[in-house]
Image 1 (cartoon, rainbow, N blue to C red):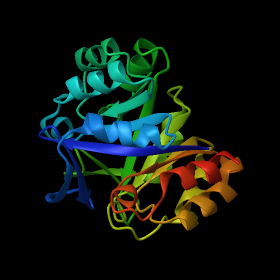
Image 2 (cartoon, helix red, strand yellow):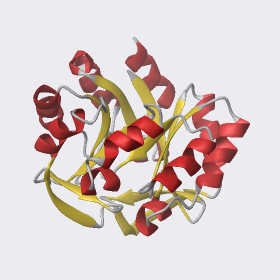
Image 3 (tube, rainbow, N blue to C red):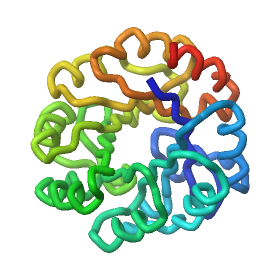
Image 4 (cartoon, rainbow, N blue to C red):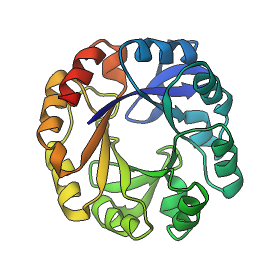
Length: 242
């Protein structure tokens, strides 16, 4: 099970949002490249890089930062935010990004996911961001949809995609802990493999998710808990890898 530190970017800086609210952002560092180095020095092998400007505007706006991190360090990067057409997908692929996160495009046009998956040669991972009622959100969490987390998860598998990121918006940035019941239900109903994000707040959350790893938990994405020093990254990686 992989532990993946999150770096969310607005205006070139490293920030965290509260429940996806752009008006409730906290800036932690000015240089995301230095933040990446901090997490790599702790043993991280992957960086979860989200272009919040891109998610809001509808096209990648901080791809240069991903490229800098990729060129400077020997690290795997998953990148998302505004990748909603083939041109943007190709632009991201040119940087050598290892995993490309698709959210809004998959929600609005599920049939296009097969095309994206083929063009990317299997490097696509779908992000399912959901609220308290299980409704899937899009466009940087600005808009809801008529899709249910569990039903949409089942449809995604038909596109060839086998891995998804599920983010509980109601807990993201809150340090409230993960909702194990929802996670287990999603795994059992969809048979997809997942990366869990949203609300990860303590080593206890890591231990809980480790217990259900065999159901299909491939990794955990951690943001605010690292920046607020609620979780020691080295300890989390050790627990996850044993």
